[in-house]
Image (tube, rainbow, N blue to C red):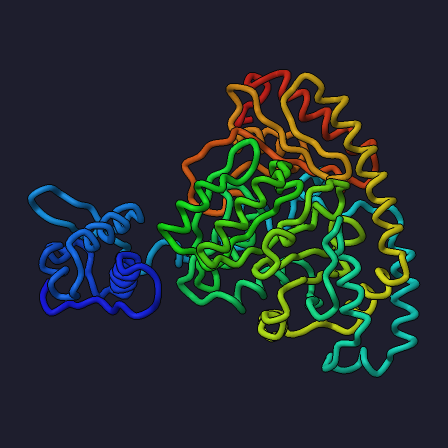
Length: 471
């Protein structure tokens, strides 16, 4: 390489800025695959740094998988894709779909959804819809230009849990929780930024983020949840701008992060200036007393929640609680990403919450979920699985020799739709979990739950001998 000098603008340690500058130039094609980076002593002279600083930068690039070093020969840029774009930016043909069918096969038991169960809430919602249409005909016929105070009050009430009590000036009403999270990512990160995820999580966020040019950084977890030490390692190496986390009743593993780990995660996020999105959709169903992550780092944590798992998924009710300084940017991003809040849905959701009807429906939903979970616990006794009171899914660890994808196909062949572990992988991960997730809330009746879980039990009992992929 000749006449190349890195752009070292920005803040932070010089070795990190140098590594970031080289990575940027590799992404842009300024430094081509196979190119030899300048000798450390030469580059140190050119930018007025020590040889040790250059060495740390090159080591950081090796850890990011961008270069390889050969003793006596130098440091070379590893091969990239022919179009010069890093794999994390590529949009796969199945983006947004994952391992699920866009249109579910007919005649199958749906154990691949965790939406609120049908407990007759349709009648309650119909009555609220009717009153809303009668009371606000003009607002329904036009675009939503102004958000009434009650929409913010509803969000503040719904997102409150334990001692976490957001105020109305922290709330952003959204078109569901997924749209809420994507608005945050769009507003507070830029294309090329890393967003950190656990290896297993609600992966449709990472796929959606990839569609708008954000990159995924994977953080390791154990049976106690996300590993704060590995989060710190990822922060030091990849400098993610944001992290998406489900601290309570994690999807799909059902792990709840301890207070000590939440405090450690908050410390790392603060040290490396990482914004945290705390998805509390399932936490809202639990009676877990652990303080929300937002209580440990309120200045940088954005809490997302809504009605889909506890009241009704079809009303698309969602809210964010965020530091007030972020609120305007997120509101603008949400409007640009979704087209804006429909008055009818936002008003119905606010009325459901403020009237207490949403809380009543949630209680009835939880009672139904627990009755169905009891069927699972009884039927699968003796096998290794996680379940959680009030939460509508189960994480099943498969016995040898079952593989996750094979077991999913076996269940499909017997009329039951479940999710394998690949559905929840936020990125390309070498970790193998040998687990599947299945929900209990979508079959129309408890007898359907019993029928589907009986299929799962029979396959576990029979082993691979009970499944022929060629039949």
